[in-house]
Image (cartoon, rainbow, N blue to C red; front, top):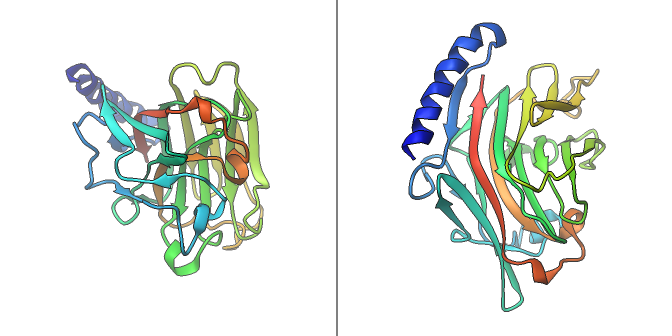
Length: 255
């Protein structure tokens, strides 16, 4: 734990120094070095989305709880379990607590694997309660589905795409399920560029900056979750793979 704290201090120092060139410096992070989840920064979403959004809008199978996670060895571990034919998992969000407009948003994580898992690190516009989805905008920094091994999905949702995933890129990485990897989105007032392990994989630069095409001129909040099945992760789920773990080393925001 001490080594990780010292590493973070060094990271802040070198980031500040490099910021003279990159114009980016670390402004917030969660290194998950506390014994429990920091509820000053994160909140839980629980249940199955009903009655407003049953299956969380994607026919997902899991029920989210506030207990399908733990802090282990400086990592946040989100666990998907199957007990008595009921899938459970966790979803956490910074909504109403930490919201940012522009910057580099990065997670270092180890993916679960197997038919039916659907881990994600993503962002939603803070005005979602007023205008709804997809007009609020959505930035999917990382999505992975176990039915498509060695593929990482980076996507954007806007009103112009009618909520469909047309602003997207699928990139193949050999053995991406092994060990930890970094996933990031660099978001400016003109474009959003996605990275995996420092490699640029997709850039979105719209010609039209209407609210329908570019809702990305407002604060967004962060989400981490591990879904099961659904329109994207399923429909088939291999019950023999459980339990599964989505392990997050850190979440960082640079501006």
